[in-house]
Image (cartoon, rainbow, N blue to C red; front, side, top):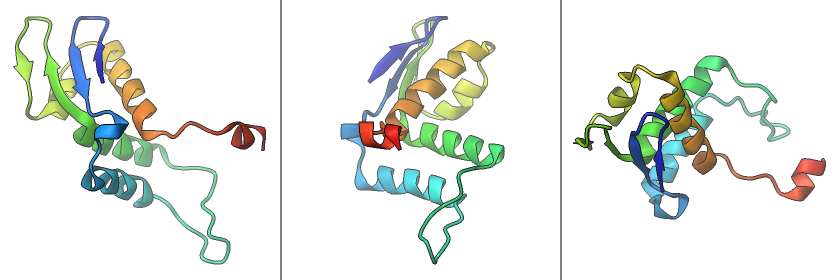
Length: 115
């Protein structure tokens, strides 16, 4: 999956079908390391801390980012999270976070939406 941000960064991500078992485990670990599970009910609370969201977002970026082509044409393939964090425009970063969320957040079924 590739997106182009408002300021011309071309960002390539792994799509869901490109994820390895290792990638999926890293994502699960990021989510589950912040989850409290009630052993009696098997349920998790309906809330998560803001810090946990940032941690999960960062690990998701580490797993999913493949490359970034800068507006000047140079291509970055290492330290991609640092590259995003060094951008001056939040809107570009927000577009990256939204794209990552689409891969890491399963779509709700109609039944789940109605419950």
